[in-house]
Structures are given as C-alpha cells and as structure tokens.
Length: 493
Ligand code: NAI
Ligand code: MG
Image 1 (tube, rainbow, N blue to C red):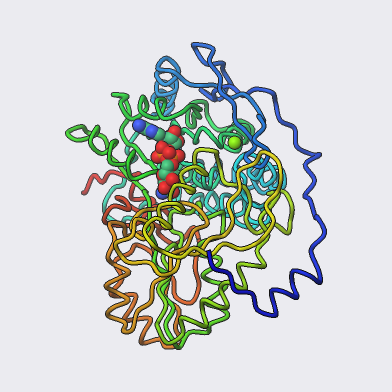
Image 2: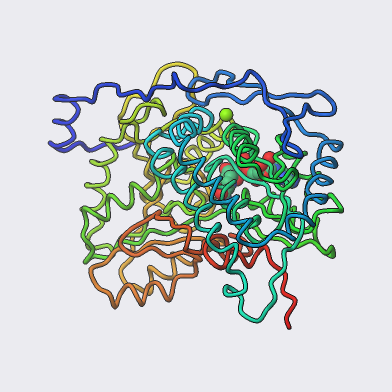
C-alpha cells in the first residue's frame, strides 16, 4: 500500500477537525415489529415468521419485520387484482390527486424519512435529506402530473394499464426506488405489490402509512416484506401481469429465464461499471469533485457509480495527486452525523463482498491506496475510500461490479482509446465525460455505449429524465415519459 501526503493533507490532519454534528433522532417513533401491508391494513404474516432489520452503523437490531410466505403473496396479489378495475375506472385527474397527496405527505415527513433511511441503510444523513427523500416526493409530483395527460403522452395509441405489477427493489435507495416503481405504475392505472430489500424495509413500511393516510382505495398498493424467496414467489405468481426488478444482474437473469414464454411484461434495472472519463482540457478540480461524487457517494452503493476512472495520460499524475488529497479529507463515520461523507456499508454480507474484491485486486498485482481516516470503533460495517492504480482492463476489479467505495484508475492517450476502454464491459448503464470542449463532449457521448452519460457532472438525477441501461445493465427505462411506457399496453386505434 503506497501513501503520499502533501502539505495540504498534513495541515488538514493536524490543525483542525470537525466537531460531531449529529442529527436528532428523538422525533423518530418506530414500532418493535412491522406487519405486511395488504388491502390498506397492516396484517401479520400467515405463518407468523419475522426477521430483524439492523442498523449497519451499530450492527444492532432496529425492528422485527414480517416475512411474507406464499399465502401472504396470494392475498396481496388478490387484493391488487380486486382493486384494479375500480382504480382503472377512475379519471386520470382523480388518480393524480392521490399521487399529489402522497408527494405532499412525504415532503411533510421529510425529516423523519431521512433519519430512518440513514438508520436502516447506513447512508449519510446529508444524502438522505438532500437526495433520497426530496427526489422520492419529486417522482410522485412528476407522475401525478401525467396521470390525466396520458392521451397526450401517447397520442392516438389508446394507452391502457398493464394490470397488476410485482415490484422488487434493492437496498441502496430504498424509498427512492419505491417511488420510481410505484408512481408511474399508479399514474397509468396499474395496481402493485412491492417488496423492499430485506436489509432496508423501514421507509417502504412508512410509505405504506402515507398511502393509507392519503386515502388510496384499498389494494391499489400492497407492500410485502421478506427476502429473495418472497421475491421469487411474486415473480412466479400466475396472476401478475408485469415484473419490475432492480437489483443484481444474477437475480435479474434468473427472473428473465423464469418469465420466458409467459404473458408477463418485464423491466430490469441491473448493475453497472460506469466509466468516468477525464480529458486533459477538463477543469481538474471540478473533475476531482465529480470523481469523488461518482464513486464515494452513498458508499459506492450506486448502480450508475463512476467506478472506473479513465484519465488522459498527460494529466494523470496531477489527477492522482489531487484525488488522493481529496480522499484524505473524506469523513467515514456515523450516518446520522451531518459531516459524514461516507456512512456504513449496508450489511455484513456486502462488506465481506467488498473486502473480497480488495484482496482480489491486490492479488492481481495492482496498487491500492486507501485514505488514512479513522474508522468508527464498535460493531458497524465500514470501508475506507479506496483507489486501485496500476490496473489492467482484464483485472476482476475492472470487470465486475464491486458496489462499494472502490475506484479503479486507468489511463489513455487518445479519445478513441478512451472509448474502447469505457465500452469494454458487459454493462452499459452510465458514463461521465469531463472536458472544456463541446465538440469532445459530442464525440464522446455519441461513442459511449451507456444509457446515461453525464458531461462535466456526475450522479445527477431528475424525475423528467429517463434512466436505464443496455447490454447486461437492463431492459426498459424508468423516469420521464419513457417510465410511463413500461406500465402501458397500447391498443392502437
Ligand atoms: P439481489 O439482487 O439479491 O437483491 C435485490 C432484491 O431482489 C431484493 O429485494 C431481494 O430480496 C430480491 N431477490 C433476491 N433474490 C430474488 C429472486 N430469486 N427472485 C426475486 N427477487 C429476489 O441483490 P443483493 O444480493 O442484495 O446484492 C448483490 C449485488 O447486486 C451487489 O453487490 C451489487 O453488485 C448488485 N446490486 C445492484 C443494484 C442495482 O441498483 N443495480 C442494487 C443492489 C445490488
Ligand atoms: Mg437495516
């Protein structure tokens, strides 16, 4: 492990530190246990089984969560099926009214949702407060606006809802992924059964309270908690019309196989190995901030993370020096502290998987730089921001999604070489380009095989903008007008 410290980082280390600035959690009221949300009621699981959700910054249990079995899945699907006719029969304006209510109720409870999101999943409060929760309400607002304008969204095509949707989401953006899935489905007249990930179920259950309080007709939204087996039961259920899945490529492929030859529609949002490309004429300080935001944001638990850094050779030394300096200033710590840049890794299993990649990278002969920051003591799950240099395109850490705060750095000489390296992956979700020249932005963005390409910024999201990849990153789009199309069947006139 090599380490270089320049004057700035030495000064930073020895002269000042931030005082702790914890967000208060005294307003949070959590129950000891949570049941399943079916037909607008919280009901205990049929076989009485529960599992724990833990706080990854302490490793301690927060609450007991119901584990849905086949009987519960059947009940939730029945409830969604029964609600479908009356929900479709409502005017678009009425459906929009409910979505506007949900959006406003999330806004009103923003502080509570942010704190719970950080407690349950480990992400810094600064992010849950400024990204996850506001974007979740923004998605409901955005799709509320489309509910009565579907005829204009798809002129002359007589859009109809697909039916009952099973929606399975991951643990990296728990509330936001629930909003991405539920809002467009409801705006287009579908009913849903949603399953949050087993390590982060709490904000989806809080969203269930909002859905009940918003007066949504019973059965339009059902929320089932459980692990992969519950998800598999939802996928297999014969009375489901559509599956929307976000998660690992492995499970995504499994679902695709299971659905082959059935009537069920499918959208998949899977992993990524995004290239963040720095050209020699880029504003280097801004680019370094963009690199940091691209990979260390949310502990690197981001499918569109800029996990592969490609730097033009002439500025590589400068970028590496500035990047290491900036990494030294990142604070890894209590997710509820407002100064924290990198919170807790989501689960023991995910930390184990990241560590396996760190070892593998070293075994493949690369160099690893990790910031020298202190890690919190105690039983939480932590990982220092990490940078691999001296890597080859064929290294496992360049090929596979690590889903942690781990960046690999490669250099290139020409734009063609950058494009070749960036596109040399099974994935195709995201990429970033940093340059001062508009013409180079056009050249690079048109050559990059990725669903989203950011120019001179990274990891920016907006409900109006479609999101999704190609190759092994997924099928279909979420967000924007494209996100509506995934929940519609067309009865062309
Ligand atoms: P996962 O794909 O197992 O879990 C995602 C969701 O799918 C969870 O709700 C889970 O309960 C459910 N699920 C699991 N097995 C299922 C099955 N057979 N049928 C239906 N639903 C099922 O992902 P996991 O194990 O939590 O993470 C493993 C890796 O996946 C990560 O290290 C990361 O590389 C990648 N990942 C990618 C995400 C993305 O946003 N694209 C999100 C989460 C993980
Ligand atoms: Mg948890």
